[in-house]
Length: 573
Image (cartoon, rainbow, N blue to C red):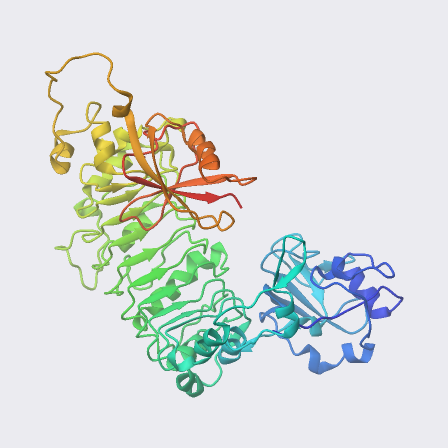
């Protein structure tokens, strides 16, 4: 892949001095310029003239346009200003960077040119240092048809015992490149962070990618729904689309060609809270006519506080929606969630990392029905089976009890709430399980095993009957100390950390009273982990996500680990 390598040195040049000042860095003669731009190093071998920098063709940027730094597709920002800067020659482009890696807030030397959201999220740059992106098919070529250069292949080596370089040749590389180069056979394409800003010709897309079903466009420069519609129109087989970390326009007028989508991911679309509460979900609702077949909708990390509807007090449409992901938002009022209660196919609702404080099941007179077509025979959340409410602010046990009123709920994740954390005055795990009579999966750990652990505590007769747990009968055998083996649990340890390497799973029998911290120490010994701090996750059967075991003082029993549990051994990053 070719990279644009701009090289500079710190001699007395007007434009270089301007850029240095605007970036609030000093340029020292003979030093690499990477301290200014944070990207490239080297020395200037050739400088553009002032007239080149003032060329209008190089300044064809518009306010609100998405750009990335030339040569670094992950450094993305929004154009906030185009024009002259007082005291400096030529035109400049003011950019607010998504990663907040700037030098100021839109003002230089006391003159304000635009307002950035954060004190140091903005900077000025010459137009030749910015890129407005590429089309979809151009990005496809970059990702799948770029061959390794001789220089890159020369850098592929290992060191021998005598510390000499031994070149490495990838077996089957040509065969893999040939297969990836046959675009007409691709079932899926991952084009994340490649600077895609436009669709290109839909007919050419259709001709090139006739069988593409899944497309990941995370972290690109797309902003207009019309471009998304054009891409979809050229991909008739497309069923899954990921647009995360693209700042999408709120205007969805005239959008079509999305009717075949089954999965749509719109995570982290950089919409602030005021827009989110008044505009964003309204736009999602406006998309419903174009998303007639949608089954999964992911809207994480968009600072949503409200679910704003246009025509009634409930969300309508989305007749095929099975999974709605609203994690990592700012929703605090459960009344906003009740607006989703009439989604008749909704089975999974993800609400982790919000600000919910209280949960209730609505009484008959509290149900938010549509005045246009009330359906009072439908129970709220009638098909909901899985609810993730971890890392919220739930403090009252009444909210936990209210979950029993949801008719089909059998899978609940409610860790990292004050009400479920004994360290913060919450109820113990076995009490939690005893109160959730219908639940089959409740992180962390297996409900049936944990229920057996708590059956002499507060497990209800209804819970025992549901899981087939019998009361303990008096033992006719001898009393007194039992064998140590009776208190051991067999667990399987699997390494998943990228730096740990491939190691076979281990099955170990440990006392149930072993702490999580002690197990981490044992893992370091079992897998010979040097200078790697392990992280442990409990993997449950039927669970979409493993549970982090972050309390080093908790015993395996208290953490929900039981016989036949699987622990994933990862690493701190």
